[in-house]
Every structure is written in C-alpha cells, then in structure tokens.
Length: 86
Image (cartoon, rainbow, N blue to C red):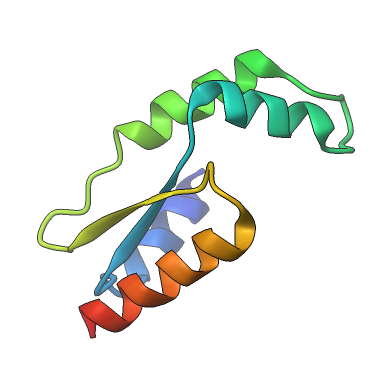
C-alpha cells in the first residue's frame, strides 16, 4: 500500500474529473452480468460505491455523468463535457 500511495502522490493533478454515476440497482445488476472470478458481489459493489462517493478533488472541476442511459448517449455526453471544459 505504501508503494501505491507513493505512486499516486507523484501523479499530476487532473484538470478535469468525470464522475461516472448510475443508480445502485443498475450498478449491482451490471456487476451480476459480468463474468469475473468469484462471481457477482453486491456487497462489494456497495462498499466500493461508498468509498468512491467520498472522493474529493479540491480545486478541480468535477462533471457528473449519468451512465444509466444507453452507451452511445453516455459517450456523447462525455465528449460534450470534455469539449465544454477545454
């Protein structure tokens, strides 16, 4: 963990953060469809969501992106958000 933290500290500060969000039910459903070692784990999804929701990026613009929509709409929203931030 110490090595990982040291690596993260050396990363440059982002100029923009895109926070991808979907309702917890959608997130758990998507996790259940994934093929992964150990299978789906709704409790792990909830824990990860709780950790990620506490992330702060002081001084960096954060744009929330709703990923519960179809992929092509989400991609268009992301592209528009990035262009608008430039």
